Amino acid sequence: MYNKPPKKTDLYGKTSFHNNSRLLPLITNKLGLEYNGVQYINDITLTLEANKLTVIMGPNGAGKSLLLRLLHGLISPTKGEIRWNGTPMSNSIRRKQAMVFQRPVLLRRSVAANIDFVLKFKGRKERRDQILEDVGLLNFSHQSARALSVGEQQRLALARALATNPKVLFLDEPTASLDPASVFSIEQIVLRVRQSGTHVIFVTHDIGQAKRLADEVVFLDRGRLKEHTPSNTFFERPISPSAKSYLEGRIPL
Image 1 (tube, rainbow, N blue to C red):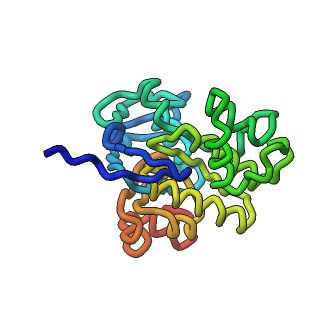
Image 2 (cartoon, rainbow, N blue to C red):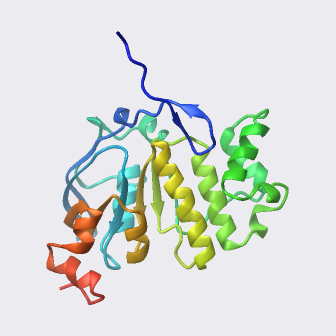
Image 3 (cartoon, helix red, strand yellow):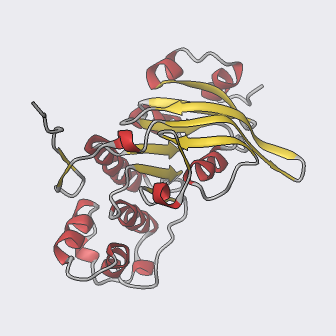
């Protein structure tokens, strides 16, 4: 007898059948990125399974943001390969993903119009309002997006990304320089997204944040993968000297 897959409820309260196995696992094989003779990403071989919150950490210049852009297909590797469930990067795969950057990128329109633009057609006011309510911005619908505070702008950027119902959500230090209240709000949204079945890949330099959010940690140093372990293992028993130094607040060796 055929058994229907279990129903899951997404961030907006809609019933959906998330199946991230169609996009994941993500596998990189000897991934490299070189510009002008400088190796920024060096031989990264990595497998990410579905339904986790993956945090990418490392010191400044470790290659965290570059790795994120490679995985999302914003830049192409100069060596190695990236496969999503056995398939090379393509436009159809990218359409199943979304990315939020450290600095919000918003349209010079109202808050509501920013979401309408992503939904691509009118007549979806109910869903748009639910999206804005989920990120605490419904009361700002008619306000200019550029007039929001930085934390509110980042929540709107996150809402725009989530309006596409991504199977994978990339977040590149989305809470950097935000006040504690804004950080808390965004972290709560991210945890709900994770619980809805979306795989989150989150770059942060904040050790406390990583402890609060991560299921697993990918640690980079000088463009190389040093550790990929469950979060508890990474924070309690790091293996590499560079990870130990990083967690102790020292300059990695």
